[in-house]
Amino acid sequence: MILLIALLTLGLWAAIATVVELRRDGYRRVPTDWTRVRAHDALDRAESGHVYR
Image 1 (tube, rainbow, N blue to C red):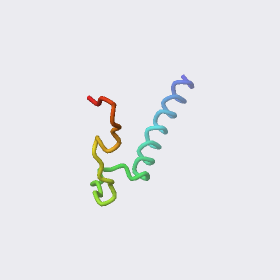
Image 2: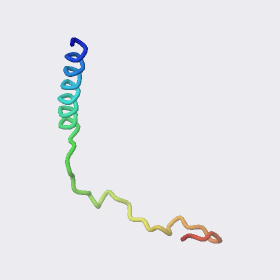
Image 3: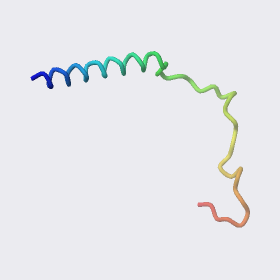
């Protein structure tokens, strides 16, 4: 019985800690700042003589 209580307590503590850390980390949808994204094409680094499919 003590083991069950300890596991439930640990599980509750872990769930609360996860929510707190996600909020502190800033987990949310943030729009992409396209001025900081380097424009690139799939063929920028293509080498001649290789077949790319």
